[in-house]
Image 1 (cartoon, rainbow, N blue to C red):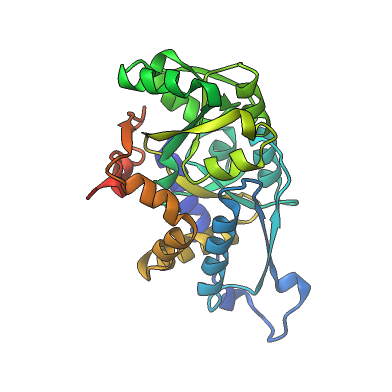
Image 2 (cartoon, helix red, strand yellow; image 1 turned 180 degrees about the vertical axis):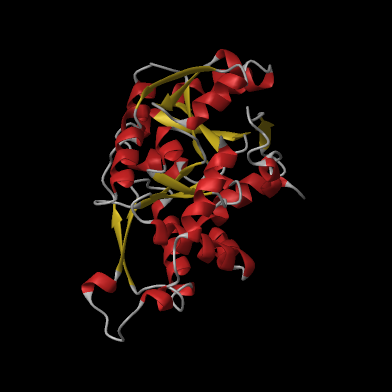
Length: 297
């Protein structure tokens, strides 16, 4: 299935002429401007995704149209968000975990398969109830973590990974209410990305009742990738070209350090215990099978 996504992307890219070939005039009109609307809404990631996308657009300016870049921060939920991006009107691009579904199979969403965070979102912090710290630490120590119920958002790809590794998962919630559900005892913990957890906890009304489990990080291969509305094939081609540039010239690494230095330092801390899980389809992202950012600790 993933190979089909790649072939679909390549087929889409081959149909996209470069901007100079499309231009028939030296004047720029509103119609000439590439409208780019990033669906954000994630406290810990949106600023980075916006900065990365902006660099991609800047570094491809010589080959593509001028652009207007906007951010839609509306909290839509995973399924509704994909509908909005596929439609391409209120948002036409976002960053999410690599997956295959009806949208990618039909070409309504085009996946640009290059990871945007070098596997960083595969490192997950456990948010727990503040009075459960001792219980959680004991579960980790006795290798009984799988006996706890992990809360996840509905239709999150993470749930498939966790179930593959024999975790008990409750994925009936939405991103916006997971911490409330955790506080009320619906499950025992929620795994958020190391880069997201502090900001999400700080923004939650339940922050006083919850805490981040110290010195424990769950890792599994998790590629965050740009996903573009099938209504905007030229944008998908531009993002792929720009990603190749920012990876090659060091811009991607610089932005990761700029936005996530604390999270990366935590991952590299020798006192951080990293629990590595197996991906159910390791061949999809073989370069992320092991926690590369933790190497050399």
